[in-house]
Image (cartoon, rainbow, N blue to C red; front, top):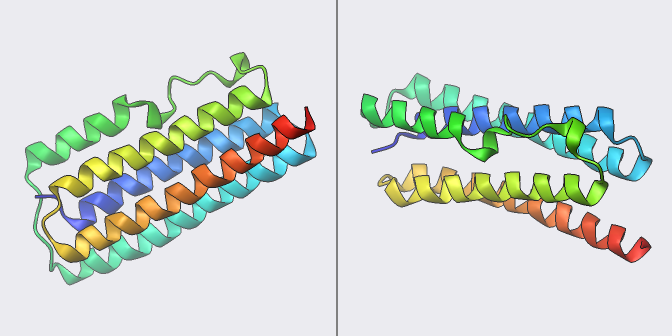
Length: 157
């Protein structure tokens, strides 16, 4: 069983990965429109980290949650480190266009959603499940923003 604390720790790591990606992309793509979006998304990731960190601290302080099996915890850490949503394999120096960048960002957000949906399928505690659903909702908002921006870019032609 996954604890809310464990899920928040993973969420924090994923969100920090996203922030780093968006900040790095800011240095490569400098047009005002994409810079504004990238900065907003990076700031959103920071906001998510702050929310998740606060929630994790409250949960940890209460000690009122199931303790995850150590093997499960290690496996989750391995998944987070090895999957695309770690963005470790993305070489921004090879990303040549805004549409390509947007596609990578959307894939990252979608991978994050899939990860948390996978986590949700194992969660047995209703409070923890509600917290996972909040995370998924936030990430879906990122996808929506990226798609809207990509559509506007296509319309500009």
